Length: 252
Image 1 (cartoon, rainbow, N blue to C red):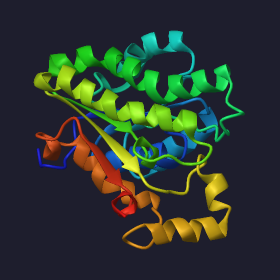
Image 2: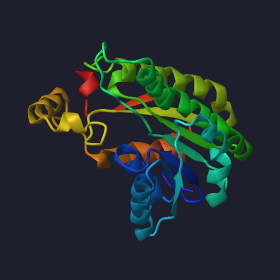
Image 3: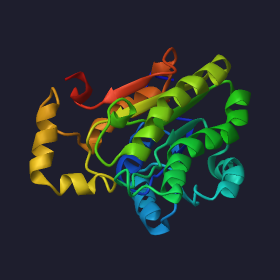
Image 4: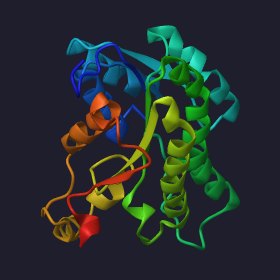
């Protein structure tokens, strides 16, 4: 197997119906992985699956609401029905309510922390037995610029993404000796459903692009290389890391 070859591997990608999750699923499939697309919206998931199978990849839809905690306990078994043991987990599902401090409620706080921080851990733990038996696995979490920076109307989201950094390190400490590497990607500003309010403001888009070292905001294709690297044998000695994919935004 080549350094970046994922043939023979099975991946589960949450939040795969759109945006970053969908693009990561596409990148993994093009590298040879069989992909299980997980999310709530069946039609959007099926559209993604059709795109992948149209390219000759193997992809299936697994509709599930990760906010329903009881659902998590059956995910590993349901996912394994398609391609066998899951080797690669990408935790791309997330929520960003964009509320001011005064607008945050217990419900919105709990939903944000649960989906962005609790679900990645409990879902990973459901899949660990299969990875441990195989002696190899990859877990890729989604961090954020707000893992290290504070943005307006992002208190709950930022808290959850700050937690992702430590969760990723703790996962690495717990599981990497078993051959299961755990890392996180911290994207800059990419055009997705979650960032739609940002990209509808042309002045803000230009301002954010100017903040990067490269001089532009992210394009979804920019996710491909790092996603495949962290999912592949090329990253055998990389674990517990949060890697910023932000065009140098966090460097300035």
